[in-house]
Length: 215
Ligand code: URA
Image (cartoon, rainbow, N blue to C red):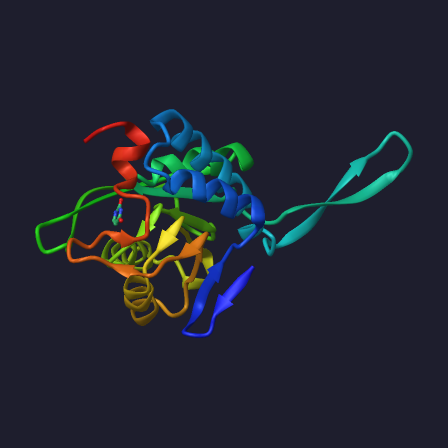
């Protein structure tokens, strides 16, 4: 895991397997099916890294030999919250890793000015629950900020929120860091910049279209 000196709350998961798979995803010749599979695989690997510091407690169990205080994850089941629609491509991988997680959804689209407009928020019980928000692209950062706002305004503390994305632009990370310096943002790559249409460069195009095979 790498950090960029510009952004204290940004963590770049530079594992070679993640980088290799991401390069295939960026290739415009990669099919919808392969793109989706790779996203799920990367998210599994990212999920493994970002859950490294989850708190543990112990449970008394009987092994075939002795009574043993066995480590188990403390507290309530986690919640995975994809930001619709592209975030769904990531929640699949996270749920494979954490099958008992609860699932919320936050639906936001970008209007002509790239501002987020909410159309759906459905969340599990939030009390004392660790929430993993996911959305492949942090471009302008507006949707990511909006999604974190949606949790914070319902009482979720920053320490219980992680945001995981595939690719981010520095412009979006700055917006996110200014709004939510207390929330950790995990990405596979911090790319170069945004173009005039707010696409990430080099990026991978429209993540939603590439996941779902739409145009
Ligand atoms: N959303 C995407 O899907 N791709 C980008 O490059 C920017 C925002």
